[in-house]
Structures are given as structure tokens and as C-alpha cells.
Image 1 (cartoon, rainbow, N blue to C red):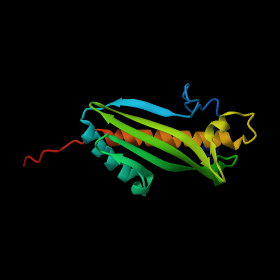
Image 2: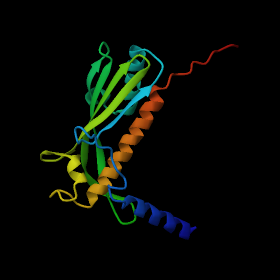
Image 3: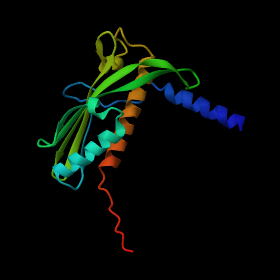
Image 4: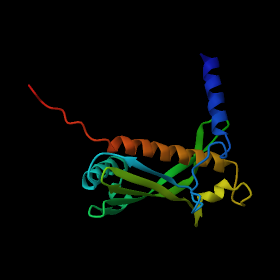
Length: 179
């Protein structure tokens, strides 16, 4: 039992030490910014999807009113600015101390039969805001090996949000009560 636990901790530690190049975050070729973007086919009107997304926002953000910058039902769009905490990780893969706070923008747009999400403008909130794209350049003066781990944490957090969004946007199944 102890050997398998040590093995799992070793593997986890190795996974967390993978350089950013192997755990590549998506970079938009035009803007050169870290960007997660997808158009998702979903049956429904823009108004219906907008309302469903507002439910998802309210369920997934502790202070949804503060996180939501724009709620435009007529234009069928929502804009969110929120944060992800990143942590320092020891050699065993255990979170130790907070490494900082990364701010991001999420834009959601709705059209007949589809919606689009765009995560962009990732910045480290410090004395001044530092674009995370600087963490991708190992020659940048602010780069340090912990940046690779932070990028992996941001990537996982955003992918978890995307998965949650897609699940939350699925049409609700209404059960008939035929008793």
C-alpha cells in the first residue's frame, strides 16, 4: 500500500514538473495572446441560451454580480472578469503557498443554434499587471521555473470551467409526471 502511494506521489510530482512546452496553453496566432476559444453547437434560441448561461454563471461564481461585467440579453452576450489562484508546488506535488492571482476575461456570445466562449487577457495581478504570455518566454526576465507549474494550473482551471460551462449549457431534461 505504501509503495503504491509513493509511486503515485512520484508520478504526480513528475507530471507537475512537465515544462510548459509539453503542457501547451493555446496561443492565438493573430494576437499572440493565450486564448481559449470555441463555437459550440447547441440547440436553442439566443435568449434561451443566454438565460441558461446566466444560471451557470450564478452557480459557478461566488459573487456572480461582481464577476459579470456585461449582461446584455438583447445583444445575447455576457462578459466576465474573474481570477484564478495559482500555487507553488513542492517536489512531492503538494501545494505549499499561494503563487499569485491570475485575472482573465471570459466573453460568451449566443446565436441561433450555437454559442461561443472566449477566455483571454490572462494577467498576473501584482503591483502592475503582467501578461501571462511572458511566462511562455524562458528568456524573459520575469520567467522562473514555477511559471511552468502556474501555467499548468491556469490551463487546468480554464479547462475545468469549459467542461462545466458545456455541461451547464446542455438543455434541461423536463421529466413528465404521469402518475
